[in-house]
Image 1 (spheres, rainbow, N blue to C red):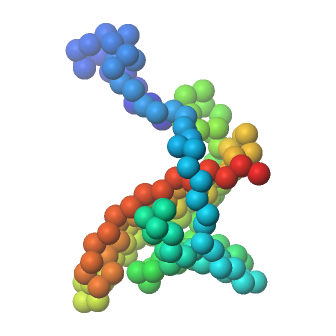
Image 2: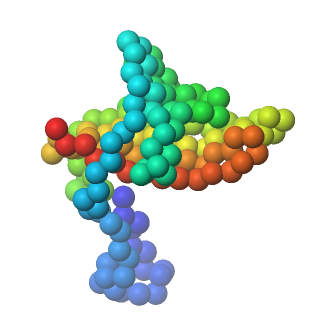
Length: 151
């Protein structure tokens, strides 16, 4: 959502629109990557993929309950993403889910702050966006990935 114009900024609304730029569409990098997945009857587990900087490595989703579990040992349940009909919406989302992982254990040296979005756009494109700051055994890593899948 674009930040609203406020006259207290000391610039005209036209200048505000010209200088405040937000990327409102996803632009393909034209790169393709194969997701390393293992799946059984109840769970999908993401594997290591150097092309994606191993950002998804160890992440798993329970297909029955929707629970997302990270390699740090924390889990979260999904919340539905409500489609927006606002004219200034960033993406035309038809449906989707969001998981927010948050947890820390100072004794073990593990922690995570991460968000996974799995969205279906009105065009039928599926977007997987995962951003995280993670610590496992006191080793800090950060990463973000946005993947589009078109059937």
